[in-house]
Length: 143
Image (tube, rainbow, N blue to C red; front, side, top):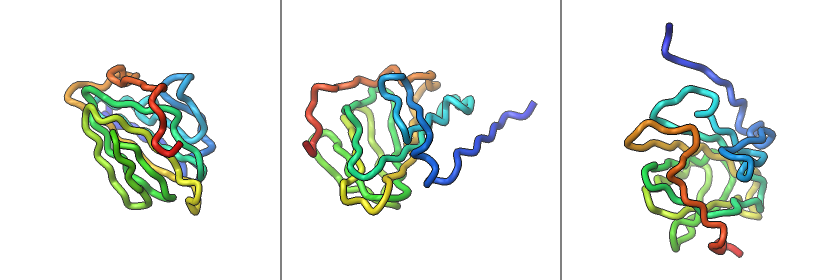
């Protein structure tokens, strides 16, 4: 038996059409959890797309997992603790444990904000990142 798998996620301009997420309450168009489709042990990955003006509806952080955001197209912003940083095609943002994060596609973006989020930690990943702490009460930085 060979220890590899292949999945075709389509071109980035097709990513918004996919509906998915980790849980029903955070599922939306433009999110696909690749590590639910491939039997990944130590690396997690999502592909994401947001239309101009769309944003995450929550902040979150991780206690064990670090994330690498690789931006492919569009313009957006990430809230990182008390800062807002601009992101665009070619931006790569590593976010370590304990950093609260959220993101949005800028309303004036020239198209969808598209990115990959790669997650890894010191232990084997579970199906759901149970170390995440959701904070729906914290105001988003651009409201």
